[in-house]
Amino acid sequence: MAKSLSNTPQSTSLTTHARTQLESLQRAHNLRTITDYAHHEIYLQKPKSPNPQTTPESTPQSPLLLNLTSNDYLGLAGASHAILTHQNLNRPGNAAPDDSALTLAQRFWEFVRQKGIREQDLRFGSGSSRLLSGGSPVWEAFEAHLQTCFAQKSALLFNSGYHLNCSCLAALGRLESTLILIDEYAHASMFDGLLLGKSLNPALRWKRFKHNDIAHLSALLESSHKNFAHIIIVSEALFSMEGDLCDLAGLVALKRTYPNALLYLDEAHSLGVVGELGLCASMGYITEVDFLVLTFGKALGSVGACMLCARPLRELFVNLARGLIYSTALPPINIAFSYFAFTLLGELEPKREKIRALSQHTRAQLESITHKIRLPDNAEWQVLGDLQIISLVLGANERAIACERALESSGIFAKAIKSPTIPHGSARIRFCLHADLPNLAPLFDALESYANHL
Image (cartoon, rainbow, N blue to C red):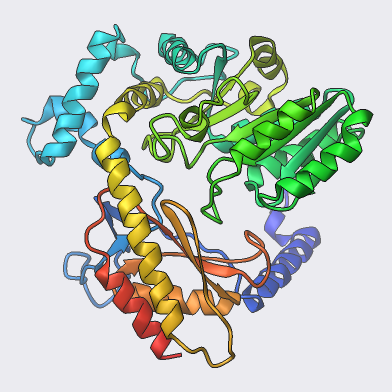
């Protein structure tokens, strides 16, 4: 009989090293854990704490927490559950969903019929990679629709924004004589793509430019543009941690200055919020951005992502993007919902207006709180964010964790964001605002109370 791996000296040594690493993370107040929550529209509920003295039925329920971490900016994910029950509401045990969820479900199934999507094709599994047999007609239909919205570009769907950025930047990094210049605060998926690209092509060169610093980027372009056939500038449209918009006009101006420069823009947090189709479309720069990334897990309330680019580059990704080639395709029902949700964006301007107003009010209230408090170590809190992502920068990891716990005790769920996700010394509480939020006075009261007790 083979010896159990857990009893081998090698396994014992590896476990010891793992524990040492975890203890180091714990001392740095940076140990991650996973908790799964019950979702109740805009609220979360922690699972019941096991108690051997009581039955599950008699164990007290955890309190509801207002969820300020969700990227479901327009509330589409929160209402999508009714799609599964809408056609079976008369079955025993099926509670009728609320009006907004029911309306969304009715419209989804009407959309399916209008587009000629067969209900039997809306499976919960695809069975294989899209390059094998995992695709279905709804994939092509959605890509065709995206191409009509972003003229002169070809669309290619991916399983997630992470799959897309990691795979596509690695693929671009395999091209000869290519330099990639990336904003230092760009998403981790982009940097992972560059690291993968470097492992596949040691000749790849890439450099960071200071966050949103057009002057620094310009200097890098001026010193490098003669040495490379292609220079790809990489940025987020709305930065996921800082919450600020990129200087897209400045990026476009630099591209026009250097004929071998191309733009790669990730609209993960701006699609559906900054106008209907994101920052690039709202500013009229669709033709100027060579690689336009859309993700569907934020404002669309779904899952997946899309690359929009020239057709030859699309075919390059079909052949070199490892996250596409080697991943089982998303289930057709998810693609159908993303397609449906995308068609709703044009009618959701009232929700975008509410997000803008809520963001302005939240930032003003947080700045008012930071101006009133006096911290014992003379530290200063900073408020970041232009739109729906607002952060209160507290400094040390342990302070952000303490603030997170204080908010939770007041019924507010907002997570501490710590290094190395963001630079050391800039730990923060990150608030993601969405159109269905109620009055946020309890948040402001809780923050002021926390600050006054430091």
